[in-house]
Image (cartoon, rainbow, N blue to C red; front, side, top):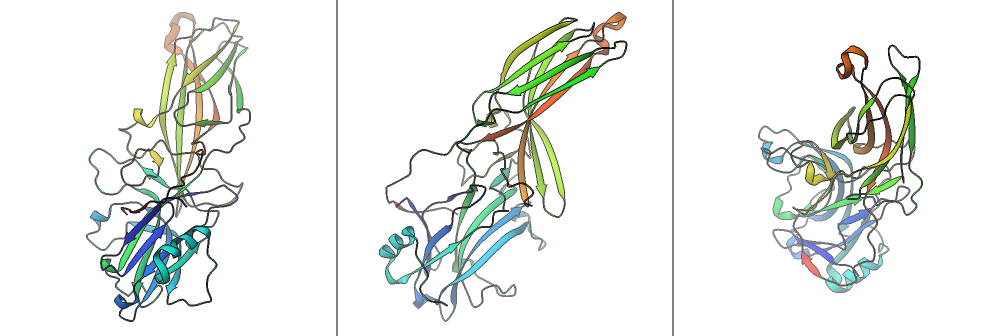
Length: 366
């Protein structure tokens, strides 16, 4: 059994146990969120115990909630009653069976199956003067003591709750196909022949921290000169809630002083490496969701199933190559123009090798 995370309510009446805090989305299926709540009936005073799993979009700090505004919108939420038990004995997973042996008869198992159209855990990088929790998508498992399952008028005291933040994550697929390719031809004034630019990536998926190799082919059929090549990577963040807004931020760029003379060809591979470490000052940049203050990386590409509608924050990347062509003639480089071509980039983390086998019951910060 893997490491177990435990969180106890302020009054000590209930305790929440989870076997892990990262749950993998395999595109066509999502790992079940299962755990156990230990309940001391003596502290309930006739009330019941419930658990919910919520996926929410946070677009403001709780510290700013001074006029009753809600800075958190639930994208999806599921609630279940765990005590008193309302049905027959629920089927137990291996993790739950191990936990029930430890907590004894006071243990109440629960499980949630997330739907396929939920986003992954993503945070938006705060600015230097921002405080509080970052905006983004997060997942929360919460056990609470109440009279009813979901009564908006019922006040639930903080001492009657315990919660753990979890992450929904995707890993890069095992198969890595050949990378995408794109080409473009552009004609300029005073010439009847084009500049042809073709770019391709060596593979479809790149891991965070790996150099990205971009193959560039140029066929310059004009009398003009290619004077430089710029290779960049853009992160595209689509925020899909009431409407859909997409924001683009350049996460790396490098210029290469390559020249391609008139009526000549050129072929070369360039490498760029998008890293969060080089983008710490960019407010609103999307990063993979984190637990507490641990290190993270640029947000991973969101993998989906075709036309399946998703809400939350969806991430994609593109590699862009801009070839600058000089104007030629009397004005020289003052009338330069760019030929721009781009291809999609899938940027993700590899699936970790091996699993934890030790049992370590430890408290966990929310």
